Image (cartoon, rainbow, N blue to C red; front, side, top):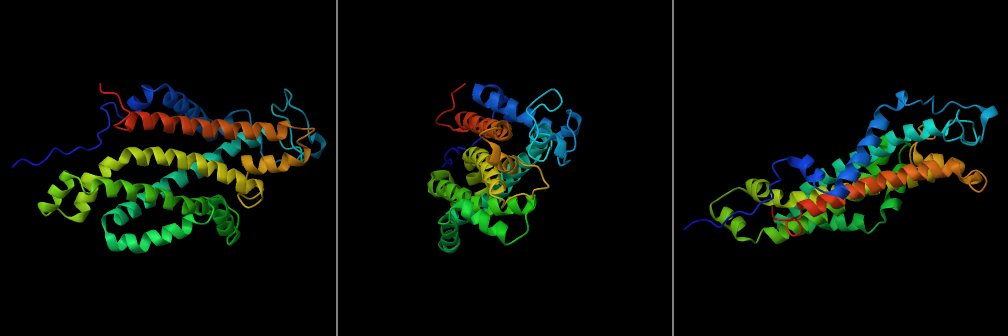
Length: 289
């Protein structure tokens, strides 16, 4: 008796680049994100100066040819601080997305397929999810010193349960299908079934979820830095740049405007990329070629 057909997620032949290039939203988001990544990498070569250099005589200068984005209350060049701040936001966003997706996927696969693991681990995940992510991140950062690494760890801890619940739900819907039961009946090991038959079908939603986690992590990092619980003041980030300018925002709105605009554009680019990938990778939305 022939085994039932195995329906698994298989990316198009052109790979991820082909998927992105065929969707306008994904292409626009990817292009903007690449520009921001290049700006972060080559920040020292984009006409910037020392982002932490203080010049009291130049404090609160309006945008001009000498200071494209103006200066803050300490005379620091806003253009340089905003460009260097791109490094922090992208590092936090990408790192949190990778860590949360990796650990959340492992936990979700185990909980969705092994009942006793689900009964124990998911109760812990539920407990973590019951605490607002921003409050959990503030508490974890408060217990350690302010640094980019600690911010990444704090945000990732709050995001892991969300990925775990997503993957767990996918596993629940897949493990009763005929091809999984056929694999079980042939004596395949649990690890083989999870990696060969279940994980490929979960790849699409996991990829999309990771883009939203990346965008969310950037916002949380900016929030933490804005309230002084994130990156240290000596490290330029969009959150602490806006915090420095909030006292003068009514008379010097550009101090807050430029970092806020960069944060919005970065989050928008990641969300556009995620929406495009969702439309391309979801079998129910993908067009039959």
